[in-house]
Length: 86
Image 1 (cartoon, one colour):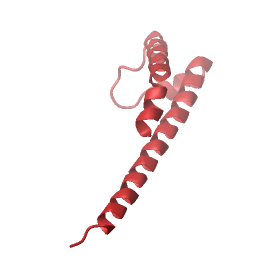
Image 2 (cartoon, rainbow, N blue to C red; image 1 turned 90 degrees about the vertical axis):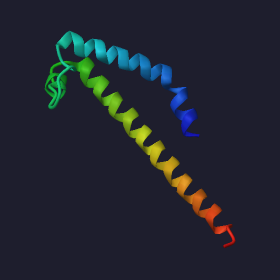
Image 3 (cartoon, rainbow, N blue to C red; image 1 turned 90 degrees about the horizontal axis):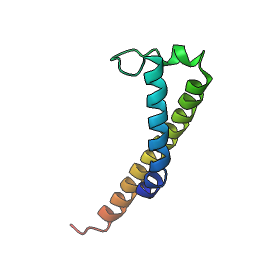
């Protein structure tokens, strides 16, 4: 299930990632280690702010899918373990 969710949006995510990288490169950010200036520049750049918002939404949905997949795996493992005869 999770593979289907992630693979269906992979092309869209790759496009968004390339656009975001280009915007960050044009603004001179994205290559630093540690604290980023992304949030500061997003206040003055509406395109970067929109990309940040969309990234946050996609990241949240991906995290939710991962948590649901882990929960399903745990429940199925519990079910299989209950069928063992020791």
